[in-house]
Image (cartoon, rainbow over all chains, first blue to last red; front, side, top):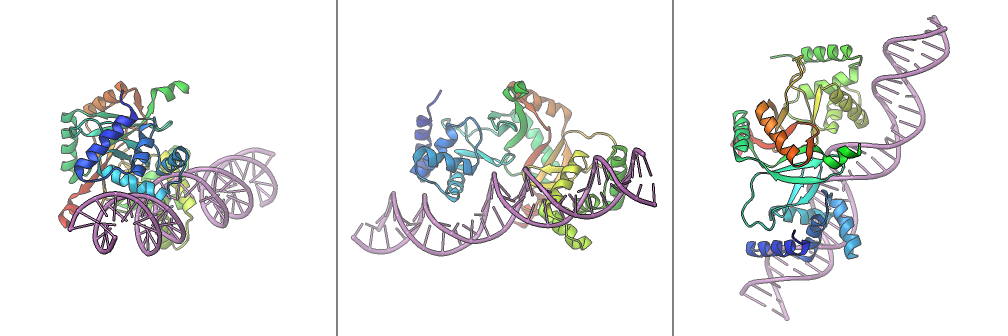
Length: 152
Length: 152
DNA sequence: TCGTTATTGATATATTATATCACCTAGTAG
DNA sequence: CTACTAGGTGATATAATATATCAATAACGA
């Protein structure tokens, strides 16, 4: 179990070695995502930062910061939910596999798992046959999690 | 190659046998999707209907109509793009497999293909192991199509 | 320290979507 | 045939997500 702080430290080194900077505000946004169980929207992150750090952060800035964090592969955007999550492999130095996100459409909890390589290859084959090319091999699946099923 | 008209006729029968009605406006929206190469937003559909049928259709109505058409399985919502497409199996009476949508993130062209059953099962297994359950087995993949690649 | 570049703030506006109430129209019962 | 009812549509307001643009500020290198 890694602390939020240690992950952020790792992220900061990662940025430095890339020649980019993990500023205060960027850390705050990343922290917001790291401490959250579920995916958050840009506006939710703005609220989080405003409350937690007692200093308003315009939504516009959050969007810019999220864009930066995505470039640095520290954050993923879940296009199914229009929300954002911290990458779960920040502290692994190796490039990670094709990420697969399971998104609970009820509580927004997100699980990031990795799919079998051979499966991706087969998928990719299907895609190529149809005359398309995978842009981002990220897969997002609309799910319900155990907890939410139990509640119903 | 089926005409738009014949597909709409088929859809109308489908609705009748379901005890629902494919009204004028609903036909117009469905036609908008059928004649389009690419996925359309609700507002784009409203524009299409306004121009083509010379009578304004409020966006609100389009949303309601799209909801109806989805219930009737005549239309799919692409959550990746926040846009809508006509189901490509309207004239097949049998229930179709797990749909897989390839969405060109450049031109919004969409291809609907069907995946291997065994693959879906494997996917499902992965999902269950993580404590989640597939809500809709529809898969959407962010792609670039051949045409757009060539242009670049 | 100066100037350049990267970062953030502020404001406006676009795009997608939902809530709500009023009106209208097609099918139904009497 | 008429009045009733339910389903369908219009109108309006507003929420939620996102982008464009210009100004202000902070960090870094020469």
